Image 1 (cartoon, rainbow, N blue to C red):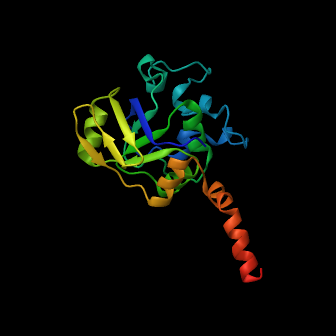
Image 2 (cartoon, rainbow, N blue to C red):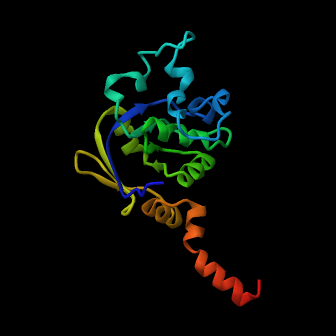
Image 3 (cartoon, one colour):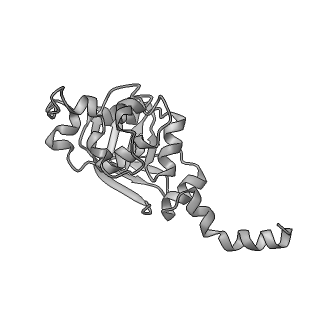
Length: 192
């Protein structure tokens, strides 16, 4: 994982509520254990028609969404079954963060473990973001803040361990491996 201190990007807005993990990455694409290529199937049932052609009406297929690294979604994003493939698909597509008023716990945890930032915003900020697609935002992991183009700054919740891992570009295993020497010394002292 790459360290994330700040994400500055335009937004892509998907105002639907209750977007579950099967809509993020349909189950038929879960046969892989590699992350590469999953972005092509992100929101596949919405992005493509029955002939496999891109649905030009879908937000991510529009030119203004290209290059956006922040997704603004409706309430209750990432609900449904636990699958790490969902944040993998978002990352592989180029997103680094999602903003919603509510993000499912399992999705949030899987996201943070994989270097994807789930941001919970209050209803006023979220409503403004939904009404203003394509605005430039700054998400600062260090200060846990979201900065709007009109100068407003608001904080978002991010627990300390996840913040540490994002800032240092490590997952839980990487964190433990960084402390292998200390663990080994402890084990020797404890007689393990």
